[in-house]
Length: 255
Ligand code: 13P
Image (cartoon, protein in one colour):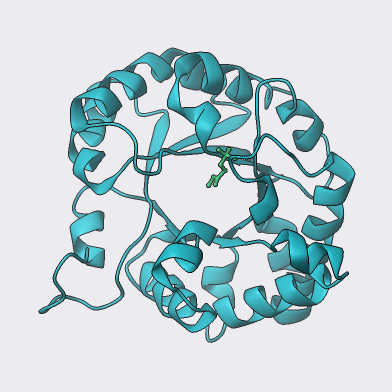
């Protein structure tokens, strides 16, 4: 019912040429697993065009995502990227509210909401990220904290859009640290997120929204996360930077 999404967030890695080679090398596995996995790659902005060119040339079994976006149509916003610049390149998904953007660039829940609304308004789909710090988890505040992030991120979003939504639960303490949440811990949070989506938009929407886990997903542990009932895929950082790391994670989504 919900197709597993395996998304690679390449963060600030790879030149345009390197990214094009990587996506080319991922095409066979994406093609072989196409019935069970939607493979998504999010290169840096400077590599979107080269990656898009490769995807368009071969059979398009890989979907293009951007790592961020500004919400204004255009204007004097030095360094920012407008929605139309992304749709023009065939971008289908935009990651919004990644914890690194919140942590290093001061993005608030309100900013995340503006971005999510703008992504939908331009016919793309946001991958909205949420996740708690270790301090928040140890204080037993994870459920309230995540619910607060999601409620704010989804303010004003219509049900017709929400049905396509992707949410990524990425506990900050598990990102790039080699520490993962256990599949059971991740499932619990993802289940709570789905219940909140149901409260906000109803059962039909909550049954269709995809919820991903992110945070040190590797070939060895991916299948354990995919086996959880409320986890519909993974947002992968480090392991998505090579074919050796990413291809087995895509294969783990096979039914
Ligand atoms: P790692 O897989 O490197 O922990 O990164 C996860 C992440 O932040 C994906 O967005």
